[in-house]
Image 1: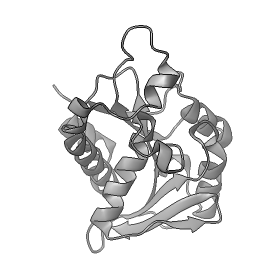
Image 2: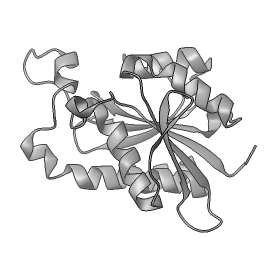
Image 3: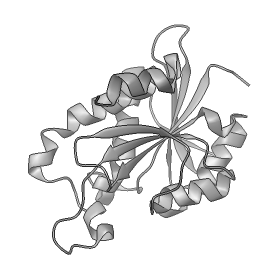
Image 4: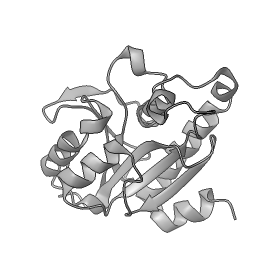
Length: 193
């Protein structure tokens, strides 16, 4: 096992119909990282699309993955990736949307519950632990009485799309910092005082 190896999983739903959805913000961050690493996603035997690379020569190796399954059954591919790369869950970073955070905010968290997020629930069940790093990307609460499931399966609003690139960049920066210097360094830099 490479002790300088990190598995970074961006959660979302497969296919072009979902690409711009709030629920796919994890896929979006993974794509930003892949561009930085000049890495291309390829189908992998773990039922995921995988891209690999390093942010800088001799730096930590990032295995970027997007499960090819729907969000709610992400656990199988994530557990298979951990086994394939011989990684402990402590080397897993999961990027996901979070209704409890306002849009254009991000929080870095280690462990904890699933907070009603079915993708996280499935990963915790399949990995047998909740002790992994999460990059929580705020998408805000649905307006009025709109069901949360409908809200996250809609594209970002036009007013949100102008701020989205900076949010994705911040999340990608946080992941690179976690891999290079640890969670605490990333939390100190990216969490507002």
